[in-house]
Length: 292
Image 1 (cartoon, rainbow, N blue to C red):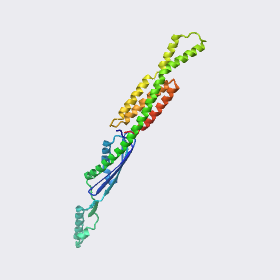
Image 2: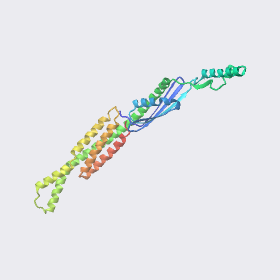
Image 3: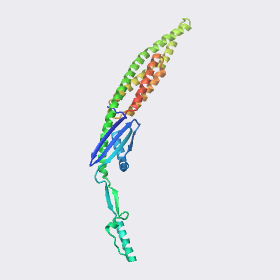
């Protein structure tokens, strides 16, 4: 089963009144490029998300969006600044002794001074957060892979149809090419007889000219190689591994053989079928750009 690089996935996981929602979308890309958008307080998870996603997906431009909801009861805590409090008390006692004043400081007084008590956000357990996120991420990746597989199968069917058309065109090209040399020989001989007013034709010279023409327009090797590339691509499409780059290379080789056939064509029929080959190869190449 082949995979497209276009897909979408969503995953959600709740634990300890904390909810993570991961949404992912991907389009085609030469490599695996992961971009992450997440709340600022979870920025420390960005590299983990990228690394984990790249282990699961080999190619594509992948955007990951993370939504985090924290409904836990204790999200803030109070911190008592003991060192600062002792310093306050030391100075109060110093003022009392120096100026002969009553030191009437009470707990309620000292608590009002700056930074004696500090309200700070409670730090979440990073391992706990990653565990919740990983569950949501797995679900999102699983859904994305499913959508990529569905589109990949559609791409595969379309490519196979186009390769069937290519094989039909190759059959007609091969059939036509077998008569090109014979037709050329007949036409050349008739032309020579016309020019020489039915004088004797130099059979040896005629044979040399026909042989040179046959060598210039012979496309047997190109047909064999192109058929081989088509068979190779059909087998490759059955692989369960990422095959996009391999298919791209095969289309380049197919295009090279089709160009050679067109350059050697000495028949309008061969040229027409050669252009059909080029058109189908280009369509396949466009489809392959979206295969993982």
